[in-house]
Length: 139
Image (cartoon, rainbow, N blue to C red):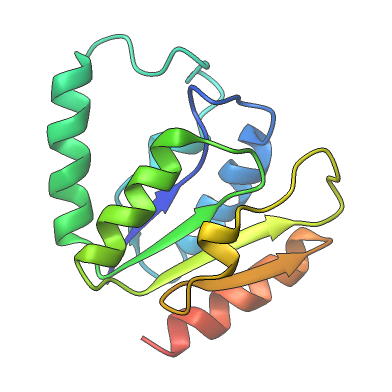
């Protein structure tokens, strides 16, 4: 099984450590196509060795080949929103994780109001991991 993990890069890297831990956990269940999203070395300017066009093409290919999408959506990101929209059009199962303990941002109604997207609000990573296990078991 292949999973496309989405998390903010250019929108802000405050949750990078959380992404890393979630990706590590997902890797015990499936192949994660986007492991780089959790890397400490990936800054908020994104990847330096690829053009924006190359990143776009690669990520579309990964989205197309993925069996499902897991997105950590606490930090708002135009790119993550776009990826979720593409995944929905491709009829991919989508799980969005939103950390309610971070009150700076509110989740977009475009996600929370969409019946095609499973949204899970959590307060601790253990809760998010349990939800991932349940989500993966339903695929």
